[in-house]
Length: 356
Image (cartoon, rainbow, N blue to C red):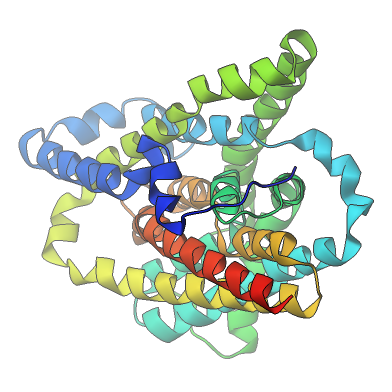
């Protein structure tokens, strides 16, 4: 897919859809609504806990699945067969997403939140949830390679099914043990993470794959991409906002009593986005991938699957946990951070074009 040049970098914000452009505003609004419900509707928690799927209430579980399904229906699984196109880019992406990215977030979590085990664990869980379809938006705005981005998102989405629980165990218990770090206050089992991934990633991934395969086969790719996906796309945001409303309704008092917690979570996330993107862009330049693929490499490595991180945190530690709160703060920080990096990327694009 050839990307059209962007004549005016100032149009980046305008090219975002209304939903994505104001995503931080919607998240803040959902937080406020949740706080109001928690204050004035004390029976909300009893109602939500009436029916459960494992340790997760049924309404919350349905909201999480609704949040994940549209995102995974957008993934171009058929592009995975084109993996031989550029092996350098593929191996760099796997290195960045599954070695450097999780290790960087692990380091930042322990540096900034060593005394907050729940928030620290939540950040590590975010670091393990790699790029998802939202990355395609940033890649498009930065004039990256659309086909390469679709391929990398598809590969990483499927790879997460296998890798997430294993890496979770490694970074939450094994590696801290090797380093002599205290993890006695982090309680979980590998099976709990595996079960959460299978439910909240596996089910919508299979549903998204089947929807895409059947939809394209019966109605054609144009209908699927231009009519069906725009209709179901907003439901991912609705599921996210519902989850945030419920979370803040249940733990609003705790959050209001310690607003500094949100800032403490935000700081390492901002550092992560900046450092991860910079490392990835530099490696792409060094590998001489060219600007489009270098931009794609950077944004697919810097973007995270916050939907999965939130789902795992809620499924393992509960919706009132600090781990879940860290997951929710993620997209609040990610959108402005990656929009800023789009501008940086376009500036570097002009510099690279001037030198060639």
